Amino acid sequence: MRRSKAETTETIRKLIEIARIHFTEHGYANAALESIVHEANLTRGAVYHHFRSKKELFRAVLEDVQREVAERVEGDASTSEDSWQQLYLGCRAFIMAAVEESNRRILLIDGPAILGWETWREMDKNHSMRLLRAQLDTMQQQGSFRTLPLDALTHFVSGGLNETALWLANESAQPKALDETMEVLTVFLEGLKHSTISSSDASRVNRRG
Image 1 (cartoon, rainbow, N blue to C red):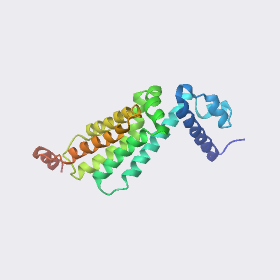
Image 2: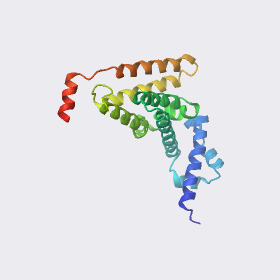
Image 3: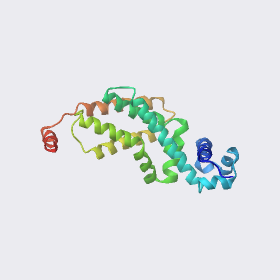
Image 4: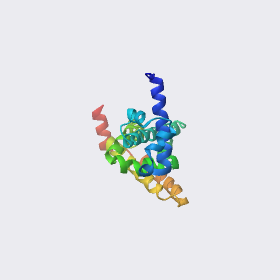
């Protein structure tokens, strides 16, 4: 019998949900597709109908994690009306979400290793980095800090956040590491906040106008 679109969507959601638990607990290498299939109460053929391989299923799981992290970033940032506080809260939310046990292995360890950095970066660009770029763009247009090349600034900040999350993922036994990270984040943003628009920057803005 042909399944409805709603049933198909629910099956895919259930598969991703169960696979995420297995990939989190066992890692990609040790997560058995047979165990995922059994827990989802599906046949192997049914799984391959939606995902051609274990790697493709993992990619869907990583996409789900990336989307959730971005939602955390957006949600935390929206709790303030101050643009600088929004930026801080968004950056903080990304780091906190990335190093959570339910996300850390999939997002920071297996994700880049299994799918490659190029794929990982493309996913990040479509989720958390997209929000970061939009926030920096809005703030720059408001004159919150001096005019800087937006793409370069976005990649600089995003790269720092990603590297920090990777470092923290390996510093779970260091209770001060997270506090020290937030201290550095605050100092960095304060430095950007207090940067002034130079006369040359102002001339460029005027010419654009």
